Length: 295
Image (cartoon, rainbow, N blue to C red):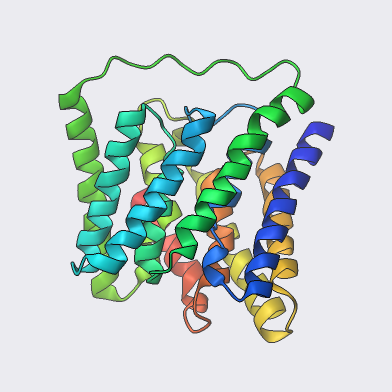
């Protein structure tokens, strides 16, 4: 329990620093909500939810974020096409690196969803993920005895199987994206929900045993993120770092209550901090509807 408290504290400190810098520098693009998910998976969880190296923990989200911004700046395609291209790019990237770091999908799709064209966003992702990658082995050595068990051996690669599997996922993502566009409910495809879909879809995924907990954590995270940001930051004028810190703490208590560390909920909780104020009140119910669709 002491180890869990210390790793939670490290993750909280990173979020406080990130949001403090964003607020004081006036650069909202510094905020990368998925960094809390990576901190939960890399620092807090004793058993890693993804198979990846320290190098790829930095490289994949960084390249994905850069690709998302490049699409926004130079690709005039409609939203659904850019979402599809981002999904395919990250899928290929993870296949090449033989990694399962699916939060990289969120890094690529987030700038498309919120319309980010600033180079500050991929630069922030690069720096923040470097912090996670550098300190993950250090936390393992200092706080965990024995070290986490080795990852499950890779299955033999099958091009046909991978094409069919990811083709199905792409079809689902595009179908829900069309629905989100037609209904003007864009948060049906909140990027962490797409990450949830991918993680849920693999054979033998432990998430399949706990769909109610997954739904609860995502709904709680969305509601808490909106309440803390809208009431504390927007209405009462509290500092962004303080409201984000309370959101993070509330999520950690929810993790302990549910006895389940589910990283995408962390990104869902912080996403309201970068949304326009007029959109955030639609966010919780759309996230819950999107969760139900994907599950």
